[in-house]
Image 1: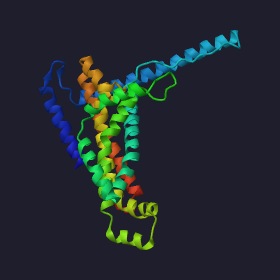
Image 2: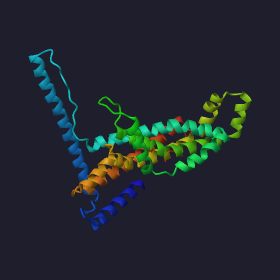
Image 3: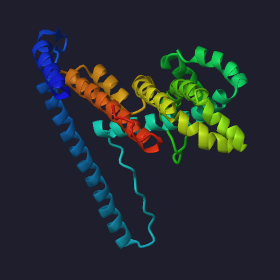
Image 4: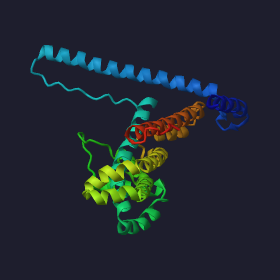
Length: 300
């Protein structure tokens, strides 16, 4: 049935796309989109070959320089070519995972403490409800100004400002589902298990490790899956505005380019964004099955 659903979608796409005509021509169908994907693959291979040739020329030049003067100072310049579509995919995945992992490291402990303490939960709940619906487009200017004021870049800097802008914006937008789901999961730990913990006089840390976490894992991963989905959606918008060289910037550059191939390339990016989002969700389900005490968790 999933294959049938995809085939029906492709058929409808092929039939209806040519009927929608824009200033750049008709909306491309699956065949045209695949052709653009093949063109992007060729461009990637050409760019990698240029990079190889660039470093080979440097090696040859430096070898001749050393042959004349063994004590000569050798410099190896970095290749400054434009990132390809596949380079931008890697940039987007690295950025979203950086923001998501940092958010998880912050949100899960906060959610556990909030679930164990009604006082902490009552104090945090208004803040979560206020900041949860804030759009990434509202966070991004604030993050950009703070990063620009506090982070000084140099030639040996670990991260570009555009990367930090996107990653921190992702972090701020995907904190809240994990906090809420974790707190709910901790609150709903079986009373029988809690009573066992009291009888055995387990320490706070042992109680969390042996009782709370195993019971709350399903809800924690529900929050993580929601957060990762939000993070991936937020990232594309953040990259468009911050000009971080990822998929969002690719889409924006093609939109600004306005060539006859732009629509097809944007559609390639849309399909890739969807496939990567689906793959990330499958990975989270796989991890949930591995760490959960209930090994019957279905990959659905």
